[in-house]
Length: 97
Image (cartoon, rainbow, N blue to C red; front, top):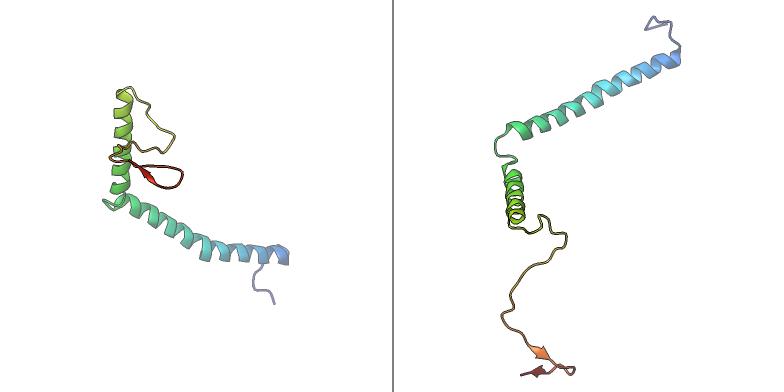
């Protein structure tokens, strides 16, 4: 008994049915979820404002330092600090005054 009347071989019919199931039940919902997430990120106000404000501040600092004649991007992670107090210790671990 044939359910589908086609001139395709049985293997091709099974392959087409499997691809149809894959497309209908896996790919379409995945695409819909990705599309909903993408639209939600762009349509909801304030969802990316913090990230954008941090990027804007970073770009403004780079522009300001470039205008001051300094390099725009520093490759090392150094911190400029001021030494308030210091102790000198000898090789025995005793503080030198």
